[in-house]
Length: 392
Image (cartoon, rainbow, N blue to C red):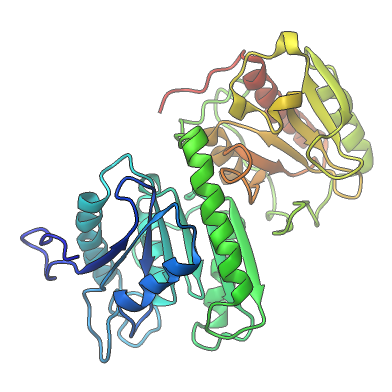
């Protein structure tokens, strides 16, 4: 299929795209690497969920053999003006093939990964998720990479342990940003391969796409509301010091800068006395994690205000060696908690779990105990129906 021409002032010609699947299904756009073309990358669709629609569009820039998404002038990363021009061209094509309201997920390999990263960083609200395969995000290329930029946007990242095509420092920077301060719920894996898609990574990607599409079909996409905390009229303060390390695997846990046991117990005692709360073994977490549940009489909040809606669990406190919590928040408040250093997104938020699920780091002192109590109290109020997030 050949799409209509781009905007009249575009320096590029009309897009050439190959499509498969139902024109009304969620659209997965496959973005090829340098030197490849759309007819090669579309073959990925053969191994991905058949219920989704797929499109591969040809990159407009030719630098030597094949096609590239942006000029890099030999520096190994996108040039800002080239990336901007190509993204504008692409977005014009995308608005024609997938009008606003139709979910769009991006899957990019190598240079296509950097282009996919640029698109989602430039306009997170436009995309329902993105996969960054064996490539880097376009750092210092004119798109924001600030904390919480991708909150509420599920991401999938796969890398090769022996990749010598993408500089290791860029792979590491991409990994740490996506699994930490970006705010994105991120599934991340490294396989013992070079610059190629591992069989296990492809199977994991297929499962991620299917589960994301299923979540969107059942729940739609949650908007990112302004961050208005009932307990912080002047805004949530910053957490002091560097962000603790958290695991990128399931179960997610805090693995550095952990909370002292006595502060964990103080936090548990305070949260246990919130109105209508009962405690028991978490229905979702590891053995020894203490769940906070609302009694039925105190439950009027929406389904997404719960980690496990069936038992009305809105939060749980992990065992003593960890000391962090998982809670459900509106996406806007989850983003704010991440931005100010108090939390990190759960990898399965918006995939199998509520979109605003975050891991909140355990308190290290009395001041942090007060702040974290207030953060979790907001989750409680939302689940109880006493707090309504501000409209976007």
